[in-house]
Amino acid sequence: MTWAPFALTVTVVLSAGVATPAEARQRDADPRKVIVDADPGIDDAMAILFALRSPALEVLGITTVFGNAHIDMGTANALRLVELAGRDVPVARGAAHPLILPLAPPPEFVHGTDGLGNIAQSEPTRQPIEASAAEFIVSTARRYPGEVTLLAIGRLTNLALALALEPRLPALVREVVLMGGSASAGGNVTPVAEANIWGDPHAADIVLGASWKVTMVGLDVTTSVRLGDDRLERMAARDPRVGGFVYRITRFYKQFHDSMGVTGGFYVHDPSAVAYLIDPGIFSTDKARVRVVTEGIAMGQTIADSATRAQRWDAFKGRPEVTVCRDVDGDRLLRLFETTLTP
Ligand code: BDR
Ligand code: CA
Image (cartoon, rainbow, N blue to C red; front, side, top):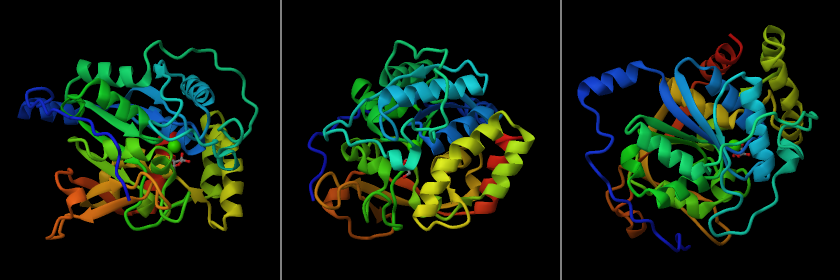
């Protein structure tokens, strides 16, 4: 096993981003400022719409990354989603390939050739902004020090690039919540690797090792919740535009899950991370230091070293504690998704 071949030096600047108690109270009462970093992607699309419709969140922008679709396709999908939601939210195009590894073909068998379940969509009418995803993340974090949450639901490449661009980023953002990894549930791309981590393991090891507050919403929780057609049909009937869109894009995704023997619906990986932001009480968590295997047959595996282990293995020394979601109230999560997306 080897680790990321380069390390980022992250300087923690204590003065930036540290709120007074009064500022922190005010911040907690306001909608939470969020940048959604995504690779849309069917479940990304559900997550983006979920976040855009939540009164608890203020989506400052959507940044895109390769993954479920090539970067141009994923960026066009993000633009389509903000249009569908009727929101004026900037979209910044991000990384087209991993930091070090060659680009793997997108999983068209999961998300379709267009990333959104092959439902023949029209061209987006909007354009991405000039700034790259990493530049947008950095400039927004500088604009609102201590306030911005990064919700990462794709490969972690943009976040790693943003850290390289601004080493003070961990002190500037409020926290990172990511969908990815697996502490003890095994993998979904390989027996041990989850897709977002496997797709750029070097970036993931950097992000999970930086000195910011990170929460990992991984397969440990996302594979124990299934969204069924009864709920989706109800959502489509209540809101034919947005609920109906979610119903249509998920037909392909459902077929994939059916073919994998998943019964009772399909996994809502990325929306689970949005649910964590809105209502973390839906999840139970513990703490661990997490490393990512960057090559070999276990590439993309997240190794979580429990906080209670007395003896610390050298590879984990100096790593920050990550909050790892371990259990979830699935009914509560699905109810939140339904009532927020189609009130
Ligand atoms: C993750 O991989 C992607 O295919 C999904 O969008 C989700 O972010 C699940 O492993
Ligand atoms: Ca995703």
